[in-house]
Image (cartoon, rainbow, N blue to C red; front, side, top):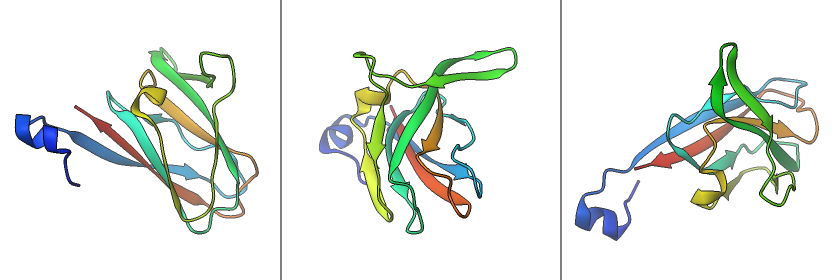
Length: 124
């Protein structure tokens, strides 16, 4: 991965991580991902993906029983949803998901086979 010029000039140590959001066969919801201080940059949608929309469960804290995630809405109260298509990268503005530590993906229809969506995160 190439770094922006400013990062090279000032030797800013960018770190990134690719996580797998697995949606099991016949399901619509992935496991909960832990960004551990990183910010969501984008999703790499697999070629075999059949859904057309993804919404999110998200949270920034953990309870005694595990991560707490809730339906993710923006500051206007609108549920955050993205339109997706097979074999496509969907990018996010860094501030859109900055407060999110835990994330779960929800598709609009059940997938006919297990799907592995690559979730790309980055931090400084």
